[in-house]
Amino acid sequence: MALIDKDIYKAKSLLETGEVIGIPTETVYGLAGNAFNVQAVTKIFQTKNRPTFDPLIVHSSSLTKIAQFVQAIPPLAQKLATHFWPGPLTLLLQKKSNIPDLVTSGLETVAVRIPSHPLILDLLELLEFPLAAPSANPFGYISPTQAEHVQAQLGDKIPYILDGGPSHVGIESTIIGFEDITPIVYRLGGLSIEAIESVIGPVTLMPHSSSNPQAPGMLKSHYAPRKPLVLDSVDQVLKQYAPEKIGYMGFSDFRKDLPEKNQLVLSHTRNYAEAAQKLFAVMRTLDTYPHLEVIVAELLPEEDLGRAINDRIRRAAAQ
Ligand code: AMP
Ligand code: MG
Image 1 (tube, protein in one colour):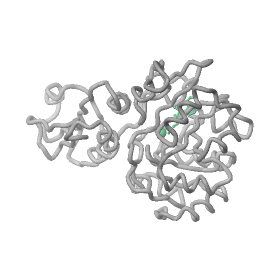
Image 2: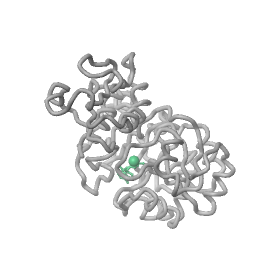
Image 3: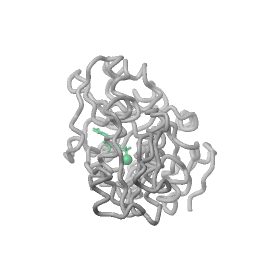
């Protein structure tokens, strides 16, 4: 089992020897290694059982440091960085050769982010290298939002998990790339499209369900629990399963036609940020209820973080 603690100096010394460790971020927990070190990056892919065509996000603490490994930060990227970094936004920028091809799955762009979690920011400031870090879950399973989630799934494969408490945002970062100078959203995430458009105007959304390696991470089935998660109406599911076997993940309200103990809601006050924060933990909890055979999920309104939450719910249902 991994040691769980809050010691950034311990984390630093492990990372400097090429180890990979669990780290907290405000989006989800990451599985981090030295982004300049091919052995460390290889270890990340192996530990997660992640296919090497799915590239990693590189985390850094400042634009000055980022300039060491990207060709340029175009004006629009600069504007987004100024508004939203540190925070749940990832930018795709042209990489320099010091970023190994393995990190980007051979793509010319590298995904870069300055996270806002204070513990990881402090650690990044101490380090001489950026951290490549995908979410700290086995490939395809629900992303971790607490140190204990990382321990449960990868604890026997890594020496250390830096504990920063529950992730405040709760879903992965929003990813934006540029085609010439047109901004394109590659993945919906913890920063809403509305917030982004208020700064740079209209953006284009990539269709999110293809498994085209040109747009890695767009794999349809992702973030999935072990039990089937379905988007069918409860009435439909009741034709196939007894009520006691059906779990329910709702936005704000319990249903009268299912046992209350089988139900969890994301936000009683219909607050999107709270719903995002709880999403993966709630999925995980329902997945562990032994008496349930299926989980019915309710979609949220398609606005604000509701869109990113729905994206995750649909992927979880897409097995
Ligand atoms: P994770 O950190 O597990 O959420 O995974 C990182 C995700 O970032 C990948 O699955 C891709 O969706 C995305 N990504 C990373 N680098 C690139 C890139 N160069 N181009 C497009 N998407 C990328
Ligand atoms: Mg992931």
